[in-house]
Image 1 (tube, rainbow, N blue to C red):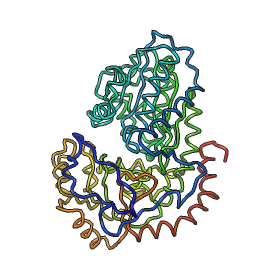
Image 2: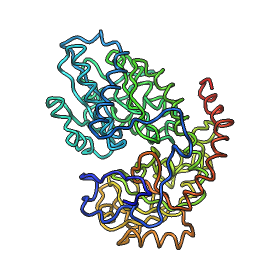
Image 3: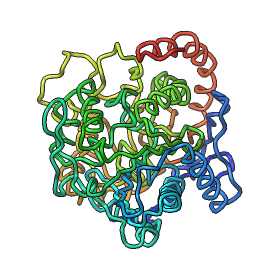
Image 4: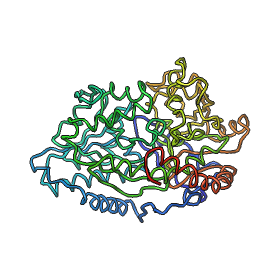
Amino acid sequence: MPASTLRPVDPRVSYYNVAPTDLKMRAVELPGLTSVHVKDLFPIPESPITAASPDAMREIIRAKTVETLARVNLDRVRPNDSINILTSHHGYSIYGGHAYAEMIRTLRDEIERRTGAKNIRLRAGVGLRFRETEEYIEKFGLNEYFHGKAEGIAPVDRGVAIETEIGRLYGIAKAYDARWVVHAHNNDIRELHYHRQLGRLFKPFAMSYATIETRSSYHQSTGPRMANLLPRLIWESEYVQKRYLFGCMLQVGPEGIMGVDANADLVAQDKEFCKLNLRWYGKLLTLLGAIDQAIIILDYPGPIPYTTAGGILFGNFLNANVDEFDLRKVTPFTRYTDMLYPDVKPLVSDVLTPPNPAIKAVVLNYCSKGYPGTFFPKQMPVLAVGAQAKLLAEDEQNGEFMNYAVEIDSLPKAVNFCRNFAKTDNILVFDGAVGGFNVSEPLAELMHRLAPEISTTVDEELMPMWLKQRGIAH
């Protein structure tokens, strides 16, 4: 790997990815790439956790988890009680997943130490790739750690009725088959187009811990204003509240893992993380939205929109030309709705037509199958490199994907072709880099040139507006 670039995430063995041996080249090996560090663009008071080794990092995460749990009252838990630690699949992929896994291990150990309870289970919720959390459980040795009580749960599993203020919704029965539940999550911005940083920490209650009927009502049936109510109403239900112990969140930012936070009051916890996320991600997303043209290279073992770098997803960049923190804006939720269902009339005619016009081409060097995304090559130029093309051609959820994408045999050839027809040398790579982005030199120069003005605009105009819209003091 060139010294001028950030290290990409390691490839992983998965049913949903090409074999690491079939990945012939990583994007960072392309000539002319350099890195842009978030701390050089937008310094913040907080520093990410750094450690000399993976073992040292795990020790720090363990210590921080123990420290924050000391502020949580566990007196209600009796030694014979059962406890489900509820987790979400995305957490296991954030910055390699090791910090999230260690937080979960520590939760198990501390709950047992402080309460005497032995029947502590892990429930790992998943989206559309039903084997994914089983792979993570195996990767991190969690079934052994939980003494055979770690299990993946999927939205097609048996449901349980949960009565809410708007009627009956459905959780996954195995998520709630314990006396107590602990909500182990993170503040990663992920699907900003849905939650708009309103109730972000509640989301798994309608996603990772819910059946497909409720999950789909969040994704497809309601726009974000309504969708944001569903997970909160589930959490506020009598059924959940009589089981809910606390939430423990892995704090993540564009520069890396920031810490751990536990709180029995999820409403207060969500409000605090809202402020943090606006400060940690606001300037960076605004900067990305100012990029007027770019070739995107996806080089990360996740589904197309969930490929990531610098704490930002390609899914975020897909909507980056719209300020998704500004609640006055018509939500870019309509982008995904229109892309999935192109014959459906948009909520607002001729507004926010997908996708971000800055995206001139997308090169798929390495990404997962198992996400319905044929709309991507239908609406933008997409080139799939080598074995990646075969993987997508055989994807159960994308039977027509390669009817619209172009197969190409090498990454350099794909990039050269894109440069010629897109007429830009701006390259932005989503490869799991921590602390920044791997980009072409012209794009690096542009980002550094734009950063000072954007920093001022966010500090003086946008941040006060974002906070006021959410009823938070500046």
